[in-house]
Image (cartoon, rainbow, N blue to C red; front, side, top):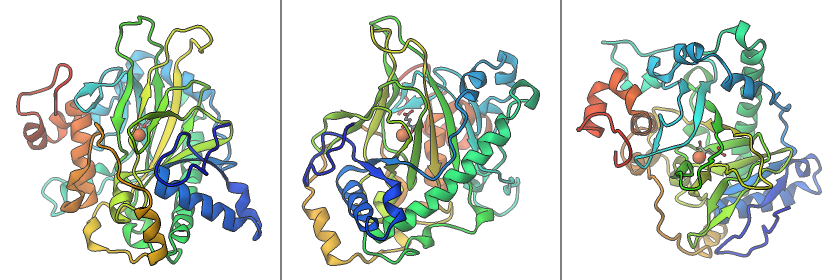
Length: 374
Ligand SMILES: O=C(O)CCC(=O)C(=O)O
Ligand SMILES: [Fe+2]
């Protein structure tokens, strides 16, 4: 089991594993908090073992991708101004390059609040209902997935207060960044990475990137390797699946809000290859992205960390330059606007239909065929 969270200071060669069960006793709780602090500051990724979430029935996933083509077409993301729905293989870009994955974007339940002509920010239009497949075609999936999202959402809030504790702050110190329940919506995806059979074919499952928000909880739903995390000196470190864990990672917004104390770490997925010893079935994963308030500007709240915590960041050293997509707009725009720009860049076809003015700004030459979009 990769477990070298004692790699002191500046670099890491594997992703630490932290057992949620340590929280159940006052004797072991401080150990959890100390391990969490190390992972947040030095790695930006961790495995959370024994998370308090009922296992999601993974047999739904192949059924989802086996839905008839007309049903996938009916719920395609291009029909949704909320960027929710089905994306075909090759429909998504990272750094202007096509990703080899097929996916369904779903979200926690939410009503649309945006209306044409109503004086509300455009990014409020990101909120809205998911496009669910017809119940008769995949009975039980909708309810099971929403139940799963509810539990991961609860864990994500709980995790934020643990993180505050690890940084020497009050448990509610980060509440400023969240809105009331009716103005919060979190997103998740169910992703399929097909096996690459031709050795010459491109193997970008998803290209190097940072996640945008605060926290991501990733369920690796098959035994494939493929997920890689970039360490401080720029090397790609494997983060293979470990049973009964979530991979938890920090997004750019949390890095910004904590003045860089919590590291956002660049990561990518290599497509599974038809090589001996590797599964010949697709790789499946289910990332959950915890959002913050769309209206919050990260610069509006300056957190005061104890000096001994700030010192730990100094000991970490500088992060090597990376090729990953950045979210540089966090220093001036509300988080919802940053999220909307990110969605426009990743899903230009959706943007062209529902946000034509933004589409023109980011894709002045029209829909990209391949590569080099931005
Ligand atoms: O599929 C995975 O394992 C990771 C996906 C990912 O990093 C993302 O969608 O942001
Ligand atoms: Fe990611």
